Structures are given as C-alpha cells and as structure tokens.
Length: 272
Image 1: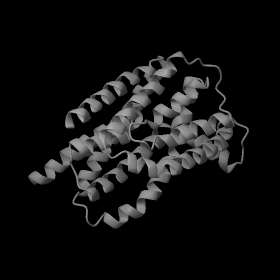
Image 2: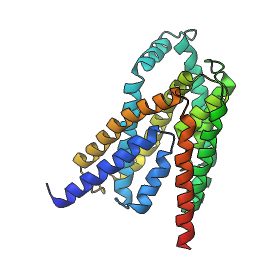
Image 3: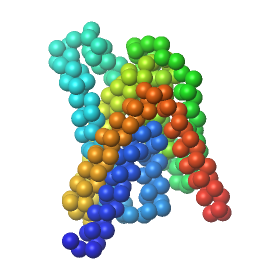
Image 4: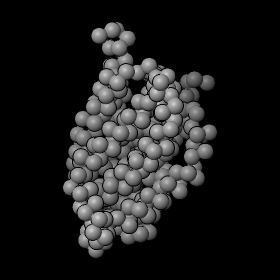
C-alpha cells in the first residue's frame, strides 16, 4: 500500500470514528466535522462531499439495524393501514415531525450558511446546546404518548440541528423529555424520526456528489474503511446513549458542550 493511500486510510478512519461518536451522542456531528475540516484539514471539497455522503449512508444503516424491530412493525402497520397499534400511531406522528423539521431547516438554511463561517457562532451553538441538554435534569416522566403538537415541536427541534454545534439527538430527546415523555419513548421516537431526515439529506446530496465523484481523489477502500469505522463506533455509541439516558445522566453531556464552546471562544479570541 502506497504511503499516500495509507495516510488517507488513517484519515478516513479518524473521521469515521469522530462521526460515529458525535452522530449519536448529543454533541453535534456537524459541529465536530466543521472543527475537523478547520483544524485537521484532511481533504479537499470534493473528497469531503463524497465522504460525508457515504457517512450518511453508514448512519442510515446503523439506524435501520439498531431499530430493525421497530421498523418492521412500522412497515407492517403501514402496509396494513393499521394506525391503531402502538407503531401504527407513530406513523402520522413521524410524518408530522418530519414536515416540521423540513420546514424549519429550509427556513434557516440560508442564515446558517452565511453566519457559521467562523468559530464564535459555532462556540455559541455548542454552549446553547449544552444549556438545552442541562435543562432536562429536572424533567419528569409523565407519559409514553407523543401527541401531534409535541411531534411538531420535536420535529422543529430536529430542524434546528442543521446549525453546526446543535445536536439533532440532543435537541429531539431533550424536547421529548421536557414535555414529560418517558425516556424509552423519547429515545425511540427521536431516532425513528431521524430516518426520514437522513434519507432526505442523502437525496439532496446525491446530485452534488454525482457531479464531483470523478474529481475526488479518495479511493473506495478508504471511503469504505471510514464508513465501517463510523458504523461500528456509532452502534456502540447508541448503546452508550441508551444507558446514560436510562440512568438519568443525559444532562451531563452539557458539560462537554460547554467546555468545548468556551475553549473555541478562547481560541477565537487569541486569533485576534
């Protein structure tokens, strides 16, 4: 194996591990990938676009595997048009939440692309994310029923996660917990809601990736290695998140977000 190929292989595995951890833990994968792009500067724009696209495929696969039993029941209920069972009732809620997420994402996309070109907005987003996570410390479990209004709000929270530094899982689980949804239901609904969002992102990115794939220097071995690393780490990160959530320690992720945000502000201040 050539030295350059080996170097790229190591880089994709490192980024895969970062993605695997941050995609599922409530600490913002987009924020960490932006930091990786800025400080590690591993790849050019074409390679970054291709690699991020394949990472999203890996994320989708992990979701489908981890929640396979729920997905089987959802698909079965959908084909039978049975919206009275537990999983059947989830279908319209996921649809409503997805529409809400898409609407919010579309509304703020232009602002996010313009505003998040420096470290300071990213740092503030991490700090805000930490505040939302910490607010769940006092949440009380009251129900395992997600209503339409709550689904819309959770979806809107998911839409906000296009902001780098704002965690998708953090915002959606926190929103559910703050509305008194039981932890198991909050966990499941959050990640089942993420599946349509991931498919939507892949659909939007497909055209851009098709246009640059011939210009990318990354080989498929490196890409696959990075995706596999992200999937393996991601699967165990999901298990860790479930354990932390059920032990009522979810709010502790706020400490990491705050430390990272404050550190980025300090780094940004030194640059001036």
